[in-house]
Image (cartoon, rainbow, N blue to C red):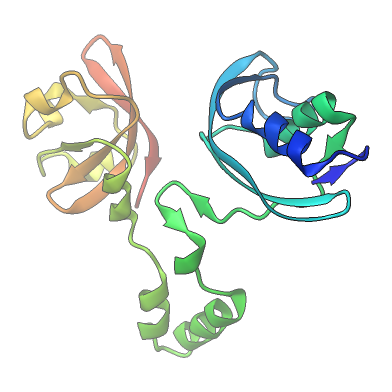
Length: 200
């Protein structure tokens, strides 16, 4: 982040503290979401180092928080600031320390093209990891073929109808340990959910 005015460290730290917790953000003009005030949580916002008006900081925020807007909002309190660059070190259950570089991925992809799929399999994360972030509902094998082509979900498709009660949307649909897709509850007559994504 680059500061527009000369601000001492003490003032900067005091203003940053005011942003920790629940804040209200208006998404920027160029955004994919409706421009309406939204509440977001800032869990951590701290300075790592400073070189004059350039500030390197760490922020741990709720999904959907605009860091560029966070810099701008802070800037309004201290004489102006804007984001210079952004480096995402964590997103959901994924952490930068577990990532691989593009060079290693390219090498693995080349090996795959030559018939050796082992290096690529060691890199790729199976779709079943979605069970760590979404609630899981089990399905019977009866209509698997139709479900894999986008058939809506009915109570008759479920292995246990109680699983769908009080479940959050979206949820992950599984056949035992196989990930089928992500579904959103709709409750349209006999249809209880529709696929948002199918792994086929």
